[in-house]
Amino acid sequence: MARYVAEGVDVLVVTCTGGERGEVLNPKLVDDPEILANLADVRRAEMDRAREILGVRQEWLGFVDSGYVEGYEPETHLDGLPPGCFARLDVAQAATPLVALMRSFRPHVVTTYDERGGYPHPDHIMCHEVSVAAFDAAADAAQHPEAGDPWQPLKLYYQMSFNKERFVTLHEATLAAGLESPYAEWLAEWVDRPEDEGRVTTRVECGRWFGARDDALRAHATQIDADSWWFSVPMQMQQSAWPTEDFQLARSLVETSIPEDDLFAGIRPGV
Image 1 (cartoon, rainbow, N blue to C red):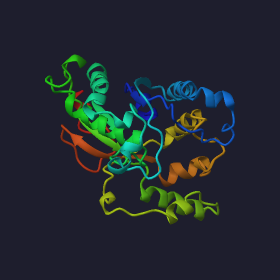
Image 2: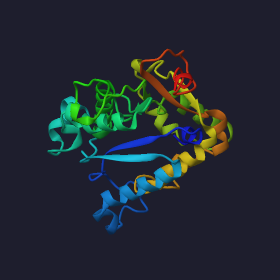
Image 3: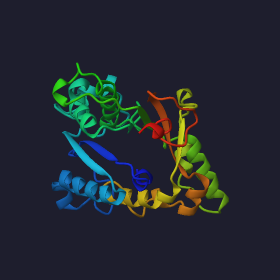
Image 4: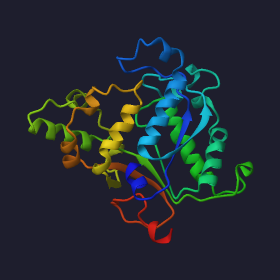
């Protein structure tokens, strides 16, 4: 996002829920009574700071957080979620405000989670489902007629930076430098999925903006400790060993060649 903003692209981040049932994961803040009593407001302020760092626009859909469920699967855990939460809503109904945003903002490219939500958080998975539904419905005048004039986004991507090849590469580079790898335990427990082979179609080089990425992540202080392992691999090593953010092209209405190095491949000449 920071790279494309620097190139003059208008970037809009859409946030589905307010994080009302989120947890304070930063051990430095976990016992702060003011944060615990006002978590949704704190999360909103954190998002404001991250938005400023990245230079993006941002909109809230206003749905209610579903809470995290360990090992969540929609087929087996849905009934255990709170009534009225985001993950329990009808997908078409929940897509309506996102369709309206797509029709007003008129994006050429949409990015979202994959079908597992990056990791299986109920709201991440629902975000994927709603994003796909809105992408497919935004151009159809017969669907959600109250949501504005139709608009057809041209490409839909799934964010795939949590891929094994990336972690193995960074792990080996860290060890080669004589440093302790933060990925050792994670990789030891990694479960290979045949369906994940070859999913990455698009690697966008953006190492120059990794500093902005990390600053935006640190802005979400209730969710991440600035001194945690997330930031333990030296920046220059990351920029050298794996300088890209990775995506899977899930839908395209323009001609493009795989592999890609740009989310706007096949679009820029015509825009």
